[in-house]
Length: 276
Image (cartoon, rainbow, N blue to C red; front, side, top):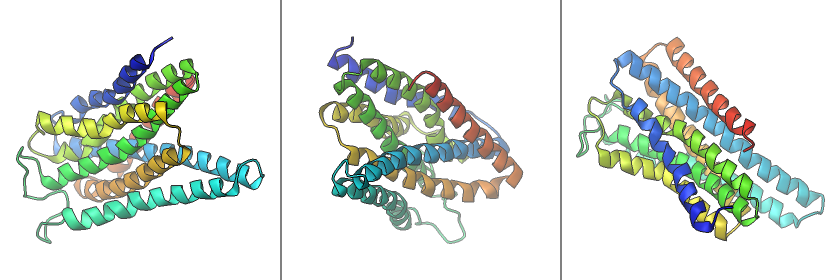
């Protein structure tokens, strides 16, 4: 049996395992290897899109079916369906607006991720902003995972809560690599402060979700953050791919994406076998 404060500590650990993926993403490599690693990161993000949409859609369809069967109010099912679509719109269109306003200060002859406008720590601004957008999308996903941990604890299913902490912690370790994927092409390493910020954006919401889920159960909030994460990740995947394909052959890019996708399924399978 664990008490409430132990649950919060475990929720924080589950989120901050995201930092475990950072060292691999920061390794020195040739341009060809960097392009392949970017492709691998894209594959992991593709898996996350599948994962978040499957969870959001399952929750939504179950609510709608229950509503039309007369088991729950019709308005609740419709509200959840609308919420999911709103989340997707916010993820896709919201980041598109952000990109059009803040990620195109360069000359037309420069690509999105090859900007010469560097930040204070020497990173290319566009690369850093793209990494931040990925962290935001993953953070929304991890917030929903935290909700599941907190809600399981409140429901008295302590064993499930512990399994979710372990499972999500293992899975989040792979997400750190996806966040830093865009920074693979940079000549300078990101500062420790930059890494800390990206890790907090991506992993911190697991802890926040654990707190919120332990005091407030909300299916609408759960679906909203999952669908937003899915839309946001689709946006950054397309943006990353448009750059990767210019850096390497299509075969190398597809091989990296395939390996990342399979790695995502494999880690999720391990979590599922553990009962999460």
